[in-house]
Length: 101
Image (cartoon, rainbow, N blue to C red; front, side, top):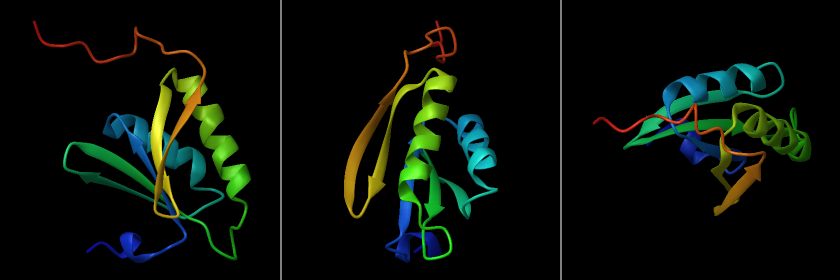
């Protein structure tokens, strides 16, 4: 079991691919401890929120703004054992991976 999975104060953001996860982690790293991992076909950005970095609202607003800028339209995240969908902006289909012909 991963250390990050044992903490209750971790928010997991599911991203479509490793490059976008790296960009999100780079954005968040100055303010929150961040880990990136691959789990099955998913790429997860785990963010530790504790007494030293307690502002979950600021974290979620930062991620929401980033989702809109990336043109992702929506991502899933887990908080307190529950799953949510964060929707922001419009999908940028030009950035979506194309299926092999």
